[in-house]
Image (tube, rainbow over all chains, first blue to last red; front, side):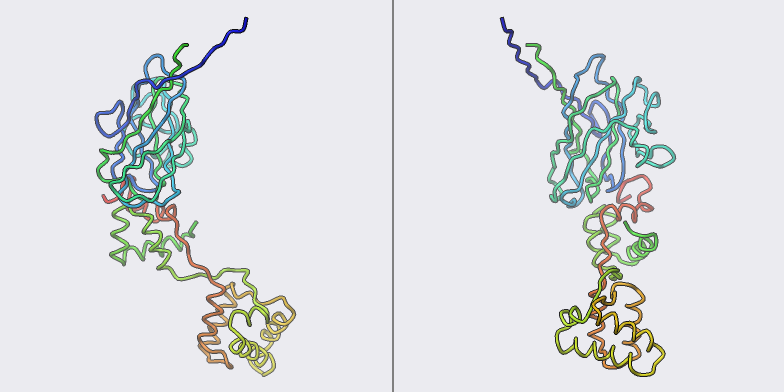
Length: 173
Length: 158
């Protein structure tokens, strides 16, 4: 007798990374084009989803260049302590990212790539809501590194800038 | 990707131009890239060859004919560059063409303009030099490098 199985999924409780009141902190205010910023560590919990949908809400200080990008990496860590067990020269704190010896572009390649989102030429006050990618976390604790290549700095107020991690969970049917 | 000297030129231009400074401070690299591209002088574009037909097409019949006759004249009469003009005349006529996108050719044309040599007129030489030139295109990635000393912590406007 054939057994029919339907695999379904649902979106679990999201984690957010933003300047204040998130599950982890990243200050994107005024982050210049061509510059990197890293976050504190987010705790996904002792057991966590296999996959996360990753989204960025971004508001810029001026019109970005259509087709330019923002890129995101994860720093998987076995420790919730900021300075412990980091990859690619990450600090685990909310700070500018310089990698090893101020060589961010080379150092960031040691991190886990999540994805690249494309911006459009929207005026300030428009919050661009960008799908970055599907992320497969490998460790409980993760900080993030974001490279702004949009052609404009982020807005000086980053209250509208949020990185959202949505777990994609099987329903167990 | 700009050369170090082009990056220095852009930094000097920004420092001397309040409107460009304002864009740099605001982190508006997209607009700054466009403004710098419009402000920087064109540079030679190697590999732009012009023969007889190309000169006619570029300058039109009258100015093209004058241009070619001046080259022939400079190749025929005694002058310090006669041998060079003999070669140029041969290249123009045998279909090889002259590369008007290399600095030495452009410098030669411009020096002829200054010397008021033959029948060349200034506007004709300007057209030929412009044909062998290209804008210095500044991208937002270039602007990030240009403005990096102003943004030691990766933040604009501070």
